[in-house]
Length: 204
Image 1: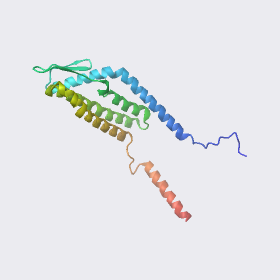
Image 2: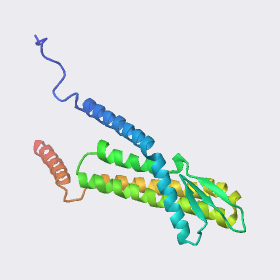
Image 3: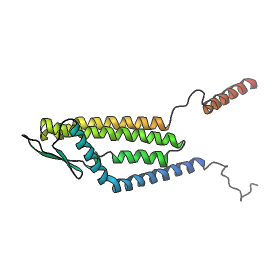
Image 4: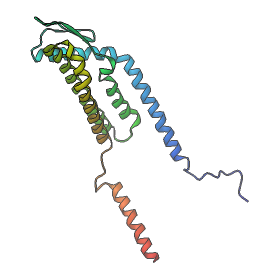
């Protein structure tokens, strides 16, 4: 008779469930870090973005723009003045924190590769988002404040989708590089496959 004191579950059978639980906990922790970091840093981050946009406007010849907290005021001589506000969802902070949290908490493997993946993804998003915001303000300067919203909701939003997806693809590609033919793991898999085929032939 089977021993009732022994578990009928084979060793390691709960391995996949444990791994799923660990990944779920890491995702929850990463989401918490992103949320707390966003609440703590968003005001300063938007103010910094506004300062960079004003500096960029000065480079292209618009010297009448000023930063007012996380807002940009443009006093156009001979034209209408206007104010633009950097909304929290228009900021790059959320995506930057998400890349950092996934690389630090969720992903595993070489730390330098994870750091490089987060830096690449975050760098693309930060730079491209600053270009997007600067272009939006320039449209208001050159075409009038009434053209800001259509440009923001159309071309600027499409550009944001493109650069976020590009950053995500490069982030994942750097984080999980494809295996090379001389990768020991690939070689071991091929050797196991050959061994299986040869054992099948020998049985015949």
